[in-house]
Amino acid sequence: MILVSRLLPSSIPLLNLCRVKLRDQQRLAHGPLKEYSHFGLEIPFGEATPRAGNDSGGGQPGRILKCKGWEHDPDAYTYFITQAAVWKNVCDVIGRPDWKEDPDYATPESRLPRLTQIFEAIEVWTMTKTKFEVMEICNPLNIPVGPILSFKELAEEESLRNTGTVVEVDHPERGSYLSVGNPIKLSDSASEVERSPLLGEHTDEVLGGLLNLSPDRLKELHDKGVIK
Image (cartoon, rainbow, N blue to C red; front, top):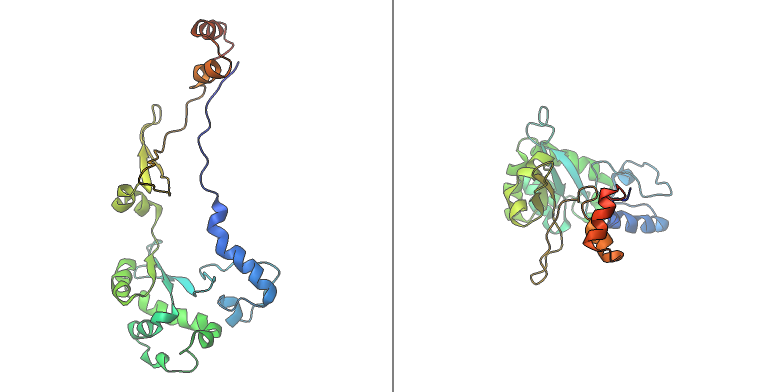
């Protein structure tokens, strides 16, 4: 029996999300990656970009930090970056204005061996705020932060629906379901996310076009059970 379904375009390769770590792999040949916590903790670097856990590495030191309610809420976390341009704002927000002039903390280079202590101090502050309060306080100060959203929050986020980042797709058998939209938006080339085909849904369409089979011949093959 022959069953034919058209293949849908594949998603954008996930390797693109690893581009910073791939760059770091090449940097590793020139010495330790100082923006990783491994450097300050004196953990030896191996031959591969290290697994950094909640520590981002990658140039601008960042880390996932606990927020208010983390003890009972597994989604109470924020991503916080100690960007050099707003370091003084970070110091003011977390109540450590002395770090602005302290030679151990005042420059990006001097902070690298102390990232663990720095993020521990920042986390003391973030644990007093919800992840959305952290964002509301830091955004006006240009401090890069972002709430870590659960998949439930992502699925229900209205802005993602409005931009087509998350789309609702209708399926004749399973009903409506959510899927990821096309990340590339072009004003003159709109794209639509379609459902996956049913088994054998396009048999007649493909065989009729590919083999130039007539409707009568296709019906005959269906009746004989050759195709479905």
